[in-house]
Figure: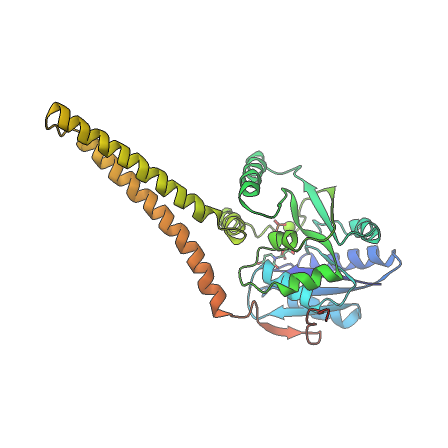
Amino acid sequence: MLISIVVPCFNEEEIIGRFHDHVTAELSRGEGEFELVYVDDGSHDRTLPILEEIASTDPRARYVSFSRNFGKEAAMLAGLQHADGDAVVIMDADLQHPPELVHRMLALHAEGHDQVVARRTRTGDRVTRTLTARAYYWLINRLVDVELMDGVGDFRLLSRRTVDAVLELTEYNRFSKGLFAWVGFRTTTFEYENAVREQGRSKWTFGKLLNYGLDGLLSFNNKPLRAALYLGLLLVSLATAYATWIVGVALVDGVDTPGYVTLLVIVTALAGVQMVMLGLVGEYVGRIYYEVKRRPHFLVKAASTGVPRQPRREE
Ligand code: UDP
Ligand code: MG
């Protein structure tokens, strides 16, 4: 059995060498054969030369390098396309995903699980981050059709058929957490203590997290659109009721026109609601726009590996 380790790397010069030594040492202790597929996501630092060096000295290692930074989602996709293993493990380059857990994943895989998902405990995270995450997952699980779990990231083992299934999903806007959940198959989760990043820093900024959250919300359902529809209907009924009441009062008590402020407030509020709804529709239209262009997910500048494998299709 061949195990592929897929590693997206973006500006990881400080740690990538150590990562490689650590992973190879750990995996050599297991029985199976393994290969490492590094994806350089357009790093500006010495990540690529280091990967070239690693690939030239270690026959188990290969790399693909992007023409620019396409994001971790694209890097994972490239890694999955290039991985030949019967099982594939996706891992961060910063050693936050402990390589020794791969043995545990393989054991669970051997028990017949197609996806073995590592779920990190949020120890060491700021309270605000933990709370927002919790609120977000509460909300998202009420909206989307697939189940998304807090603490679950991309650190997971995928069986061959799961990888092939994921490769069949060619959408441009990739939200892997949702894609993995969407393909299904037998999935199991185990918890691990998250390690603190030792070198370099996290590429997540608040803005990036916000966009990621929005992507999750919008990539997997159109319930927000439906909510907009209901909200619109509710506002129309309220307005109709109010109008009827005003007209009634005017007819009974004679003409009376107070409420300049009420009018102003209502008009502004409704304009706001309309803007939000328009923005929401725009989000979906924007997604369609990117999908129909059918641009490649990434461009490769250099690679030590051959042509990517195509998803294996059962005839
Ligand atoms: N990464 C990537 N492209 C990017 C950003 C990150 O390939 O645009 C890689 C990065 O090198 C690392 C992994 O994705 O291996 C996770 O990134 P990071 O540690 O910054 O995220 P965090 O652990 O904070 O979620
Ligand atoms: Mg990290």
